[in-house]
Length: 80
Image (cartoon, rainbow, N blue to C red):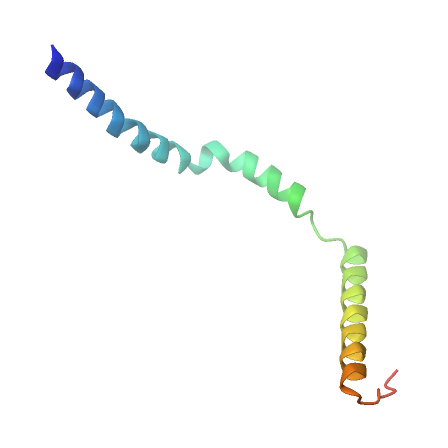
């Protein structure tokens, strides 16, 4: 009786992780959840939001460049 239970336990210990790995790699089970979550995190782009973000990035680059030039002692060029 002891050998049979040990064989059963060994099969269980080996098959459980394999089964969990197989289930977690089935895209059909999680596709709806992943797509929904992705849209929550990364909403579809809106042109106005995109433009505001690009403008903000440009202002920050300009500010960083001005700060760097000020630290270096180089006069700023008037390119506006």
